[in-house]
Amino acid sequence: MRLLALLVLFVITNINEVLSFCQPGCICFDDGKDVRCDHANLTTFPYMVNPMLKKLSLIDAKLKLLDSASISVYQELEYLDLSNNDIEELPSDFLVGFSKLKEVKLQNNKIRLISDDLFKELPSLEILDLSQNKIERIMSDAFLELKSLSSLNLSSNNLHMISSKSFNGLSGLSELDLSGNQFEKLQRETFDQLNGLAYMSLKNNKIKMLPRLVFTEQKKLVKLDLSKNSIESIEEGAFSGLHSLKSLDLCSNSLSDISSRNWPYLSELEILDLSKNNFATIYAGFFEGLGSLRSLILSGNDDLQRIELNAFAGLYKLDFIEVRDCPHLSFIDEFAFEHPNQLKSVDFSNNALTNLPVNLINWRQLDILELSGNPWKCDCELLRFLPETLQSLRKKSKSEKIELRPICALPEELKGVAIETTSDSNCYTLPQPAMLAVMFGSFIIIIGTVIIAIACLKSKTLCSKNEKEKNLSRAPLYTGGSSFTDSLTYDKSDIHRQATLPIYKQHQQHYHHQQQQQQHLPSHDNGDYYSSIMLLPPPPPGTNYLSRREFEHHQQFQHGFNTLPMRYSDDANPYATSAINTDFRHQQNQPLMRPPSFIAPPPPPSLPPPPLSSNFKVDPNMPVPSTEL
View (spheres, rainbow, N blue to C red):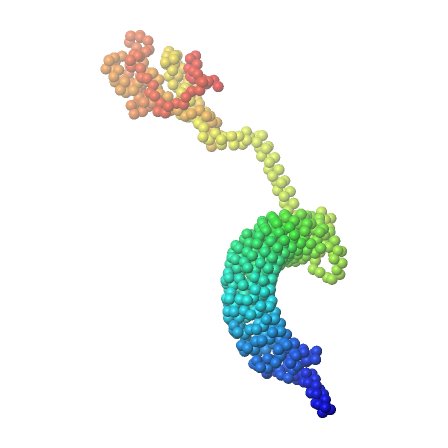
């Protein structure tokens, strides 16, 4: 009996020694249940460690080969870290049967393939890190039995495409990191199995376009990182299903515009990063639909030049905005913000801004204001509010650290002076080149107006120039050959036959006198007077004029009967008359008259005269028509 007791005591003593044994180059904690062999320069998996081991770390241990038998004795293992080794392949049964294993880290190795039998019978596995390997392919159903997996890191590999079947069984996955791969295109059904995701990163890939409905099953997704891609367009409906999204990172892409129809799908979005894209203008309603947005980042948009009216309309809760490092941004509309009273932090540093409208935001509500690195023009408009605002913010922050302060670039008198140290009293003593130019221009205009007015008073012709131009289409009243002046020579023998001839001669003399006067009058270009009288053809010759045919016909019947000096006209031109060499002596002392049968009636005019108005009449007592208006 005594011998048996000694034997039991010996066994117990040796077991404690075995359990307390620690592999050379390793550090053991918690009675050998936590072993760390980091940087141990091992070639094979460590042995002779406590079989009750729970945590094993072999970071940078120079491991190349893994032996399934060496690790199979540690069935109580919960944490395994094999990062930063030279492992190229995992045996298919290496991790099979570890029912208590919760976290496996295999990052920064040389693994190329994830087979479909590698992660079997791991019902408790929650975290799997396969980042920074050379994985090119993931077999279908590779993660099928990882029902408890919540975090999967596949970043920094050589994946070009992933089948939707590769994620079968991962309905409980909440975090997926696919950043740093070679994705160029996303399939619509790629993430359909991942309806429990809360965080997903596709950062630093080569994605050029987001297809519609690509995230339609990610109804629980809270954060989506799409930064550092080559995204040029986002199809309408691409964000459909992202009703719970709080943060969207689209930094460092090639976006120049985003349809505002995409924003209503993101009704819960609070943080939006659009920095380092190709936006040139933020136009009205650009962010319409993002009613929950609190933080907006537009920094680093090298092409950004203008922020227009109502650019931030609909952002009812926006309290942080950062628009810095935009070298061409020179204009922000006074009413760019629909709800300026909500803003608490504003960063407009390192842009090309020269001025800020006083009504842009509620300056007194701010907690942080960054304006350094802009060529500020310190005019009266800026100095009325900005120095006081900066002084107030400095007192509020109670910070003594040296910060970059906005300084004046113009005018020269204040160049290099911190705006904070100036006041609106400085602006009144400053020269105002623009104002001087306006004043000088106004003075010139006034002087010119006075000179023109004086000239107008002295010269009626100059003043009535515009009135003359209005009458260009009217007939000249006193020009040679007009129907009015020619009508003065018209024989009115039908009215007063006996009195017409002497009056005709009198008017002929008056007509020639007028022509001589008109030679000294200015021409059409020199200020003629104009009337609205219509141009009519010249009047027909009087009754003492005969055509050649009438004259010859008359000679056949009268045989030398000549009572008046007769004139005849050419048939082709009835108004071109020629004298007849006849004997004008009256042999029978008969009155000067012509037979009625040979009186030449006036021919009708070539153009019908305009109808006479009711206020036009012919006075029979006058030799010429008179108009009474």
